[in-house]
Image 1 (cartoon, rainbow, N blue to C red):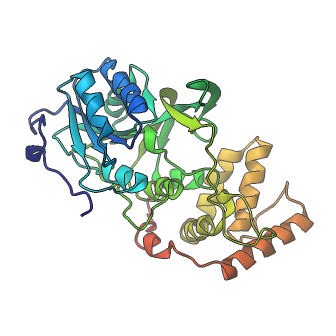
Image 2: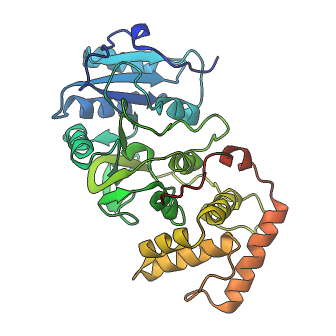
Image 3: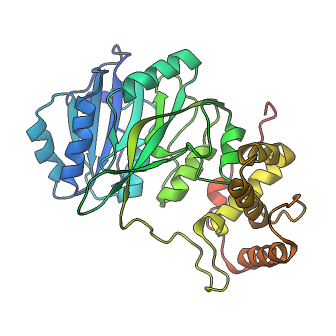
Length: 347
């Protein structure tokens, strides 16, 4: 059976609802005990000590149990999945918005990522100071290779697209012309007051689109902090093809594929010029971003956009290419979009 929502009474080591300042850490893992140990040690080094970690081990061999036995920390709860869910379903389950073991705060820590010591403390301070229920923390990207571990890349997951401040849902939608929107490892929330349901459901079984659809499920202001607080690990072999299944002469990078096309068309139909202006504000004074935005407008079949960097011949070529994609490729995401992007007049 699929993983079920677990009440605090069912979990060994759980805290009560009278412990409002406990931070709940949902740790997903699968057959990577060394990386899991690094992630959990980064938890033990937190300046904020009031946390409980729940290990959702998706491996039938239960390698994570040996790591927990080695660390011997009663704040860590081991919960192997009764059956293998797969990486994406396991992660999605961990994004239950409400508390699982009575914690006031929550976030998801994948086993290949790890935290800087003040991650929890800074996020709680941000929630209180900004008066929001969700914080999106920037992540440092580090490269993991067989020969060397965690090499800095001088890049971050969202620093290129966002700056420190409050973002309303439509502001986050505008970032999807450039990236996935929110990032899984950067989310931190108040379980008692959050209004957004962060689980996207089994119909979205792809990590790229899980983040996109999680962005679409945000219904309240989010505070983004550009100061990094954790590490997102990029593996040397990373690069799974999420592009379209069209013939090579029609294929484009994944960011321009059919599913993204469906989402952008839906957003433009709902928010029109307001959304375009917000996307333009992200691309302002940066030619690379402006070119990306223009390509995405073509992907969304918006031929009336005031193009500046894409020439007429390329404009016609890409526009026709995206039109053919829409005809050629089935849309598997429309059911998941229903009800997610309801127009909000306040924006």
